[in-house]
Length: 413
Image (cartoon, rainbow, N blue to C red; front, side, top):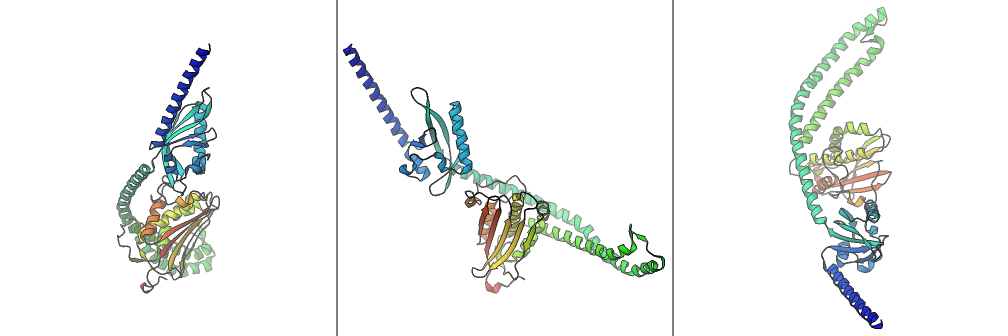
């Protein structure tokens, strides 16, 4: 028996040594593969990982060991991770993951794909998770760039079609509108001429019905009706002109003098219906004696339209307000446009990324198809910048600063 026991001990030692060597080779392979590999306990804390994980995250091994994986994610991604690990634990089935987002030590957001598997001990009991992952940020950037390019091509096609439509519609609308504009003064003169006769009849015979109302009431209302007709036709004329300007191809030259107040007025005329539908508290304050800026009015108009549309879409109800203003900062010689809403706000962790190409939360809500990333690029083309401040549940403030033209270029009043 002792000899048999001794033989078994020797055999067991050989097996254990073989397992140790196998484990060593396995670890060496994991340490040298290009993909990230990590092992976590059942709470999601990192227990083992290869150098690629450090490379991906920007953290040292000492900073990562024992840390929970969700510490590297924002709130939204953390919830996705929590639910996914729970599902793997509950079912025992591996899970493929795509486009998970993590935050590097330097604050940069990266994306990865991979797999999650449940680890068990010799008795088959769950003891943790094994994960493989590969950084897919560059691929996602390329895909997003291509998608954005396709979106721009699509919008360019829409603008061409809209330009053709506007040209035709403008002609059809302007003809009857001009007819109304030309004939209204004639009717007004006719009223002035006939009013003394009607007044005399009123004095001799008393009140009478005219257009469904008593003459005494209609007499004071008719001048207001005429002025309303004239104002309405001028409004139609201005809307048509704004539409024609909006779809007209802007020049590549960004040196034309631009009155930011006039650009704001034109932009607001195009979104006035959306504004009235979204809020009862809309205010505009135009700064006085603002200097010109050098740029392209149509491109800047697109930025303003996009900002106002975003503000409208963020409002929880029509009692929440929007405020638009223009000012001039003399010290920095910046013409400043501010759009402020009392909407849903932007979470603090997302605020630095609102102009990133990945931050695209409202592509399907209509508008002119210009995201904040494109608006930011237009502002940068003009030598300016956009700043965002926000508080979730209270609203967002967007400040667009544009350099004023030289002192000798004149002043818009």
